[in-house]
Amino acid sequence: MNRKRKYWILFSIFSLLIVSIAAIRYYSNNISIKNIKLSSPNNNAFQEEIYVELKKPAPVYVEYWKAGSTDRFQTTLSSKDIKHSIDLLLLETGTTYEYQIVIDRMFNVTSKVLSFHTREQSPWLNFHWVNNGGPFDTKAFGDGLIMICYARVPGFIALVDANGNVKWHWQVDDIGVRAATITPRGTILAMLRPPNKDVIDDKPKEHRKILEEIQKPMRRGKIGFAGGTAVAEIDLTGKTLWRLELKGKVENDLIHHDIRMDKDNHINTLYRTSRIYQNPNKTSAAPDTLMGDGIVVLDTLGNKLWNWSVWDVWDIENDSLLDDFGYDRFHMNALNFDTDGNYLVSVAMEDQIWKVNSKTGELMWKFGRNGDFKMDSTAWFSFQHAINVNSEGDYMLFDNNLFREVSRTLSFHLDTATMTATTKINAPLPTVKYTSRMGNGYLLPNGNLLQTSAKTGSVMITNMNGKVLWELDSPFVPYRVEYIPANIWDNYFKKEQ
Image 1: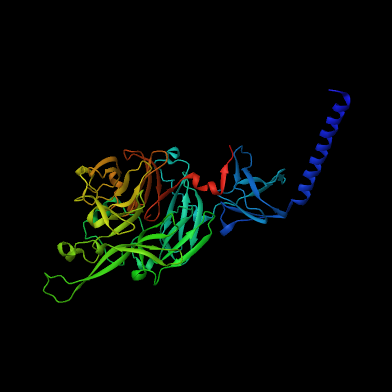
Image 2: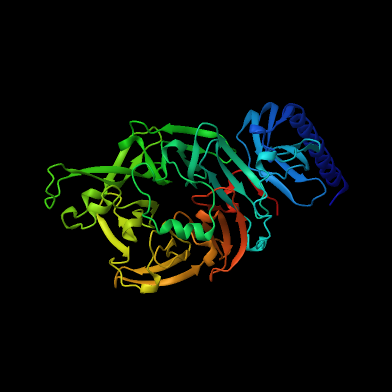
């Protein structure tokens, strides 16, 4: 290479470097941060909201870490704008964090390292639920959180970690929260319940008290059924997206026990439905009012899209139990989706799970005692709750068994070609954890089970044999507790690799 050409190449590189430096300075001067402000939404100690104002529109994200830690986190990239609001979630309380604002450009513009200190946890959220001397294997818990609801006033939803710390909290002052679940779009759907609609004892009971209770006729009726009068959707920053009052939207203005959002973002839930019936075997001329259950689908504005009534598929004429249980004949207490989009319904009074076609309302099959599937009689369940299809594709439920007086989680493989049921999981809880009503059994990502003995106030992680590995002791009766996997937060932040 001749000397003239060599100088020309060096000059070109030098010129390009000068232009690049000028470009970087231009971007820094024109796409820079004008203002940063922090706040704690709802006065939560475990959450910070960072307001960032730029001189010109650009997308941004935040890198943050606990002071002195090598673990770093990064929020998702925001949309191109001048003003940004970015939430930092699941923070440790009473802790110093450092962070940087990053403007996402060809040449990123980064703020200096800033810091903030989260305050101590609010006293009303320091429950110390797991400091009870019970099993405390945090590895058995996994890296997610459990979601627990309080049905009195003020109602709340709390997400709790393996150490019993509240990492997320949503509160509603005028009503309780009966149950909540994660939606397909990564939000929380909550059934809101006025306590005066369902007068129950919310304090956990000892084992002998529960046994005394089940010797009496089970309390039933159109008031005592864990009902709700409103629905709300909450995002994972704790913001209420909407709240729907159900008065005039469904029969009796009430829904009950379970609520789910489908892939079309519609609300699917259970409701109470009546039927006037004249029993030909009765001498009285007065007809009976039978109370049953149904499924209703609403949009988020409360418009009814579809509904199904059990009376449409039930053989009333040959039902010998109507005289004794006509005021609450079925007591459906759980609703979920099968993998094909049809409904799974827990019918407590029949000790069965029903599959209902979500388009036609056809009763496709019944599973359980006296059902359509051949099964091991030792796996018969009664007054079951929380039907779900687990990650193995098996049908899972929580057995409140009123006959055996042992609560357990069961799962089954159902062969609809041979109409046989094979028991896959049979995980009984210790006798002292027996609960006659409510509760749940779910398969965790790590292969353990989440089991809730509602009446005793115990939320447990067990192995497949029912051995308790971790336990939370609730001061109130938790109707149902669900597991929130760690990847639910991927739309908000991720740990840097």
